[in-house]
Each structure stands twice: as C-alpha cells, then as structure tokens.
Length: 367
Image (cartoon, rainbow, N blue to C red; front, side, top):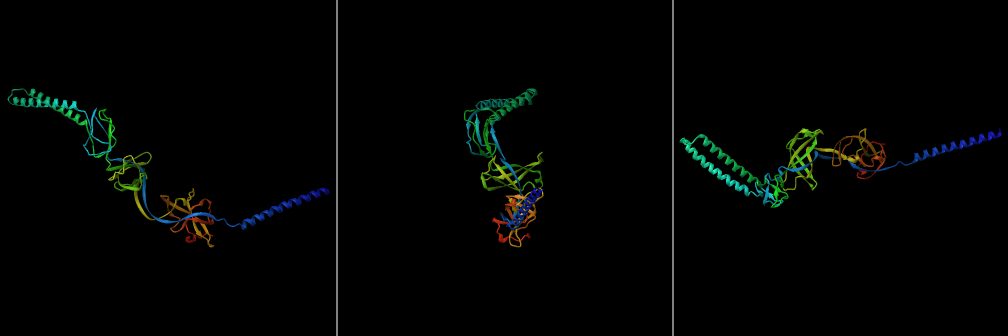
C-alpha cells in the first residue's frame, strides 16, 4: 500500500513537471513572438504615370508586288537571243528573250503571197461580175479564199510575236533561268519580274476590329531588316467574307520609292484607331491577376513614417509595350510595387530597393 502511494506521488510530480515545462515553453514562445521585430520586405517600385496612347490593331502579313509574275513562253522553241540581264530594270514592252522563228517567217512570206494573189483575184472577179462575165458564186469563193489566206497570215504573225517575249510591265528582273541555245518548252519559267514601285501587304485581323476599319485610313508597317524605321501606307481593301475562325483579310498599299520593301517580306502591321491623352499606366509586372480580379500593391507611409503597402483592386484596360492601362483603382503620382509582390500581404512593411523614392511617397492610410 505504501509503495502505491509512492508511485502515485512520483507520477504526480512527473506530470506536474511536464505540464509546467509546457506552460513555460508556451510563455517563452509568446514572449519571443511578441518582442520579435516586424519583418521588412524588399521590393522594387514604380511611379504611376500618364501617357498619350495611340491605340492600334496589330496584324502580321506578307508583302507582295502589285504587279509580279514569272515570265514564261506560251510557245515552245529554241532560245535564239537573251536580251535581259539578271537584276536589270525593264520597261513594259521591252524585249527579254527571242526564240528562233525562222520557219514562221518563211511561212509568213508564203501566206502573204497567197493574200496578195487572193486580193488580185478578188479585184479581177469583181470587175467581171459588174459586166456579168462571171458568177456570184465564183466571186464569193475567191473572197473566202482571200479571207482564209489573211487569217493564216495573222496566225503566223501572232506565233512570231509570242516567240519574242517582252516585259509585261515596268519592273525589276530576277535571275534569268535559261541559256542561249536551250530548247524551251511551253510554260517553262524564264525570269521573274516584280514592280517594286508599290507593294501590297495582306494580313488578317479579328472580326471585332471591323467597326474600326475603313478604306483609306493610315497604317504603319515594321520590318525586321529595318528595326528603326516604320513605313506608312493606306488600307486599300477589306475582305467582305469573315472566315470560320472569325478572321477577316485586309490589304494595305505601301509606296516604295527607295526600293527597301521587297515581295515576300514579313511585316508587322499597325492600324491606328484612336489617340488618347493622360492614360494612367503601370508596368505589367505590377499587376496581380486572380479569379477575384486584378490588383496592385500601392506603397505609402503609416503614422510612424514606415513604408507599407495597401492592396487595391483595379480595372485594367489595354496593354501596350509592357505597360497596362488602369481605368480605376489608382491615380497618377502614387507608387506601386513592381517586383516582390508574391511575398506581400495587405499592410506589409516594405523597403524600396530601386525605382520609387520613399520621400515622395504619400500616406495611404494604413496602420
């Protein structure tokens, strides 16, 4: 019995010690947390500014010449003369290639002789017909023979003309693809010719842009070979059909007096819609996106002069060159966190390591 009391007493003492130690530990932890300094989070910031924005519709397209074609012969034949030089500038009607047409010239002389003979025969029969010395049927047959001879001569002349290949319009030749003495098949490529005086840019835009598009409005193109330049043109055509993806084809014309634009180049097209002044903007990195809406952290001073942040809901608008339009929620002159927002909560204490200057930061009403 006495041993039982001893065991109970030891147990009570041990339990009391454990409970006391637990209470002591809790008190120490509470004291440590109560006296622990508030953490300061380093962030970078930017001032909320205003800008003049030119709103535009972006599109990507390919340049092509208003007139551009691969020249080919409609007639087969032996290449007799190559008059064109690769890369040369040509005028409409200028000879490029001549195919051998000696046989056709001989046939033409024979056909022209038949025409002259037929003409003499018809004239003689008409005189005889006036005196009823010949029948009308004989005269009709002679006139038909004359017409057939004339048609044959015209056909040979057309064949000869097709064997003398000329430039269809003013332009610049590409690389000549044939050699003198080569037998050229009908339709075989000879040389490319492009009119570089004016180029077309064909692109696609979303159907939602249609109300803002009209033929004649100014468009601007940017090309990778000329990153510091922009080329001005005009919207010349809008496809009346919207495709199954909700896209519409558009076409713009660009004058090309210096020849910098070339068919086949890819270009970024900007179609100017409107100009807006005093647009409130922030860097895109300043905005936190969530299912509950967009927000930013605004930096301000509390009553003690410490920098703290206030989370504000905003209404974001258009985006342009890494900046975002903010329609509601903040005003110009305030400062927002641009990096480090993932570590923040509302009223977090911060220090600005780059960007905004704390001295210019207004109070935001946080405690």
